[in-house]
Amino acid sequence: MCIRPRASRSGFTLVELLVVIAIIGVLVALLLPAVQSAREAARRTQCTNNLKQIALAMQNYHDTYNSFPISIGWGNSAGGAYSGYSEKVFLMPYIERSAEYDIFANNNKTVADANPGPNGGAYHATWWGGNPQSFSGRIPVFNCPSNPNQLHKGAGNFTYAINNGTSHYEPHTGSNATLATEGRHNGMAAFMYAWNDPGNDTALTMAALTDGTSNTAAYSEFVIQNPVYSDGATQKKREIKAQVWTWASGNSTALTRANCLSQTGLSGRPDMRGAAFSWSFVGNGGTYSHTMLPNEKSCHSYQGDWLGSNLLAATSEHTGGVVVGMADGSVRFTSDSVSQAVWWGMGTRNGGEAVTQ
Image 1 (tube, one colour):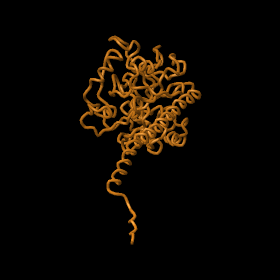
Image 2 (cartoon, rainbow, N blue to C red; image 1 turned 45 degrees about the vertical axis):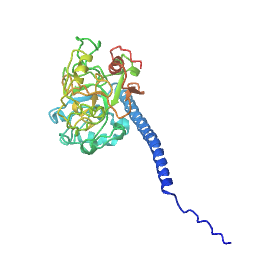
Image 3 (cartoon, rainbow, N blue to C red; image 1 turned 60 degrees about the vertical axis):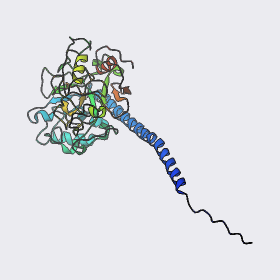
Image 4 (tube, rainbow, N blue to C red; image 1 turned 180 degrees about the vertical axis):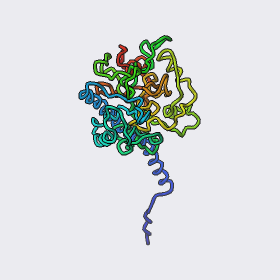
């Protein structure tokens, strides 16, 4: 009797193949969020490190000059508004960017007199500016890696802003608070004309931070403006924080915030916030306001806009909050759910508010 050998199997059946594919799909679905979360954690860590470097650069600048760096809100006649250099220019030697700073200084006489000279001025890709060599680069320490947007192909873009305080002094609620007007801002930014003027803020020293350096925000982050949302982006939170709404006003910090939240028209400057780190014009985003809570709507300003007054919120692509660099060099993650009182207290250097989170 002849017994035939059984034929060996040479592959998967269709059912087995479909089962394997389904299992792989489930594994990918389970692992992908974890991978994305790990990547965002790494980006947030880098963002934290960037803000720490900037805060420490502020400290080192103060050690050298016995004051924190200023922002020049309006230039002299040689360059007009566009020679208004931001405090980031003054910090460049303290963040290992002396080469770019030297190009700027050589083209522009000295930083101290804010004279742009014939070849220079604060850079902006579509506005007047004449320092492309030193200012048109996108400097990593001025940019959070989580930020997805860019303007003008990224030239000179940045995502960190100095704290300009709140729209009004304490008490922040009520209807008759004192306006933090030009020359009387209560944050860390000091805006000055290129000449002597009563509207100038005073250059800040450590002694001016009566609330304490560990209680006063120095810098935070923002999402670079995305000009492609043509409908005003009034519904989606992610789009809301990538826009700047029009001017707002009020008789206290709380009322000004509420008025900004009610605005429906955009500022009319769709390609500015985050465009160029060297220019201190408010619309360009070099400063932010603690009037608006983290990741809320931003409005252009509550008063003038050449000497720092603004209603631009701290915003981020991190889940649930923003990273804040404090004046003592420490860095903290502040939740979107932070109380108004705490956030407003963090924003002022001399209000005496409690800032325990």
